[in-house]
Length: 259
Length: 284
Image (tube, rainbow over all chains, first blue to last red; front, side, top):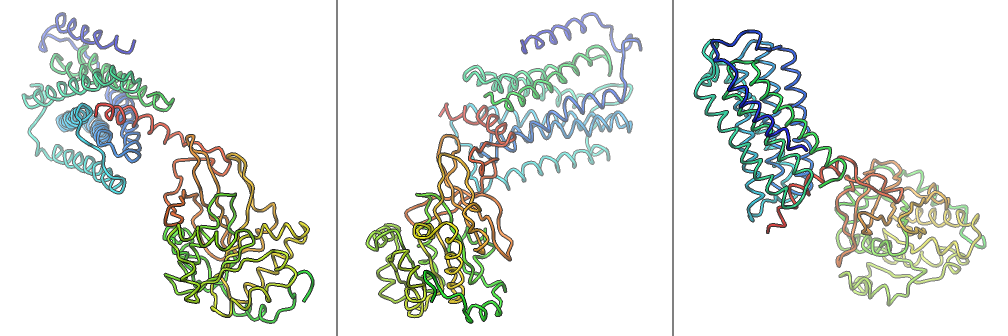
């Protein structure tokens, strides 16, 4: 049942793309962009759920030393931290370009970590670190992610990063490339974990694979959107929020002792 | 001499008390992790109750305490047994890599095999003092106080134990008193019920715990007068080189109740790890 929304969202994006007029003709009645609601939704459904995944992955990594888990945790931390910083900057401080740059770059970093993690599950290479170095390695990884994200935030605010979004013009080719890559990499990592999930009938992996898939679809919607807050961008946002719910269900399955 | 037992009046005991013993000189066990738990070792001159059920490694730990005292810290020791025959102790110690006969020949160790009633009737002075002076001993292990209980009434046991503890203190010995407790299944037990806990300065408890269908051994310091100590339960093993204390049972709750369980966070992390981590191992 969890997989049903995936084609539904793809269908909705397709339908909206067909029926909606171009950006110039899009009336204000077709746009809904409440700043508070946006920030709260992104914080609750993406940041908090990602932090939860990052925490559980960290605990799991210290137990087993599996680098796959450390990469998953780093991905979730990058995704959660950039989302909370970016959305609040964009919605409350009016730093639209900086906010979008941070969220999209964080998404790319997260997708790279996810793909690497998913690829490791498919190889026979040993990816377990020794117990003595686990704590320091995990600290290094998480601090590395957070400090990189902090550096990205400062660089974006200072205008040191090429623009991702220009008011009145829309998204730049750089954003298209970054978001496109992220969407593709999230899709690939979803398939990698999905393959594993169906091989081993794991509930946790099932929900994780769907969560990555929904995130990928959510990012894909950005390509078709006419303007922020239009039906296509909300379809994409809801897909990402549902992805966050799926991450939460994966964690809940772990709490219940499912595998 | 009072019969049965030892003299109550003892000027050396008063002298010993007036000197003060809690200045912080530590008697190391030589087991690094255990000494860490004890913040450097037992306090000098303290009486330590080592309680545990059969097979928990009390004798091994006591012998290791004495052997390490001799070989690492130059402190001769006496092992008093009411239970095992000397040959059996020599053999078991040799299997753990300790040559007690050589230590005896070097006049650094004495094995005293006696009967509890002899100790009670003639007093510790007669039985032990000669060997203590001869070495001269700094450490002593009594295996075990439980055997005294076979020869005296329950209400007299505390009195006799008190006399023995006091006598060892007057000789400035750091003593390890073994006490056998009964533990059925994974159930809990207490050393307070035997009424000895207040007589001794330190209590080290050894117990079996069932974790994930395996019997593991747990060590905990229940009490240590005048010193901070590690309050966590630690797993230990009896290896071919003696007792090896390892990591604390940080991932489990309720170990002392005899029914330990992982904390919910650890259980969740374990399930998470199994989903992402262990599945990969099936590939290889």
